[in-house]
Amino acid sequence: MSLDVAPLLETIADLEEAPTMLESLLSVNVYRDHLRTRNDHQLIQLGYSDSTKDGGYVTASWALYRAQRTLTKVAEKFGVRLTFFHGRGGAIGRGGGPTHRAILGLPPNTMHGSIRLTEQGEVLFDRFGHPIIAQRYLEQVVGAVLRVAAGTSAGVQPEWEAAMELLSESAHQAYRKLVYETPNFLEYFGQATPIDVVTELTIGSRPSKRSASGRLEDLRAIPWVFAWMQSRNTLPGWYGLGSAIARYVERIPNGVDQLRLMYRGWYFFRAMMDNAQQALAKADMAIASCYADLVADRELRDRVFNQIRDEHDRTREMLLLVNRQKVLLGNEPVLQRAIKLRNPYVDSMSFIQLGLLRKLRALPAESDERKEIMDALRLSIVGVAAGLKNTG
Image (cartoon, rainbow, N blue to C red; front, side):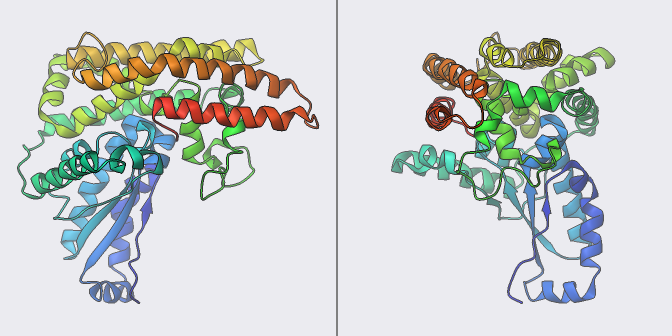
């Protein structure tokens, strides 16, 4: 059979169980014989979107890092060469951010001269629409691959990995508490975001839901991230990070100094922090508050939105504490200026969208006006996505 069999790992549980899965697979004689016909080469796809939706940004980032390291050790044990296929890109909550920085942040000795990456449709024009920009982008990616393959990056200190374990644990608790343990959270999400419109868009190759169960687990990651971006929360790209850092600094003596050292010396940690900083810079809690006002139950509205706003403020404070900047994206002035210039135009589109959502949800299901308003809402979604330069 001249086909590669590529396991897809896209939840936190998948990633944690990955070494056992691969060892079991490579222990099957029939499969091992097949792999020899493929030059002892195994492809494994890593899902950034669903892992982030499942466990939150920080926990998913760390679980993906650890999985690559442990899977590589299993492959070496069996004399198999691994290539990781990174299913990432677009919004930060789906593994987006500068590709070359992500490559530089890969675990040491896990890339052996080759890598596979997805390029999301929403970023194709930005990266490849002009020959000079496309050339520069490819230079950065190839340069990062060569640097990693040559083993030029500094080693990762054991205490840094121990710190990430603590950060991941705390971030996971904060994220799960909001998303999976807050009563009626799905009701809030359904009313405080345009998810009802997003799921009707015909822009994806797969249905927006795996089933009609109404469970969060069955909503695909693309509409999940898309809806949070549209409501100006950008939550999937940062939620839990602030609580994790605050708790670490509180528990660990000289914790701030440790995190600052990690930020300076560890590509993985710096990329994780800088990507969250970018997602946070695109958020607007004042406008997000207006979306929260769409929630009919005022107690539910305040209970959930206050958690989101508090974590937003905490994450901003902790990011600036670690990277020693006075403002978000202070170390990336070009991007900072671009976001500041675009946001006022996006704000107008957001307020138009809010008005349309109120009208749509007030209409009876059989109203003839619904189609006209839905068409206008689709246009508003395109406008907000273009301004933020992110969909889902």
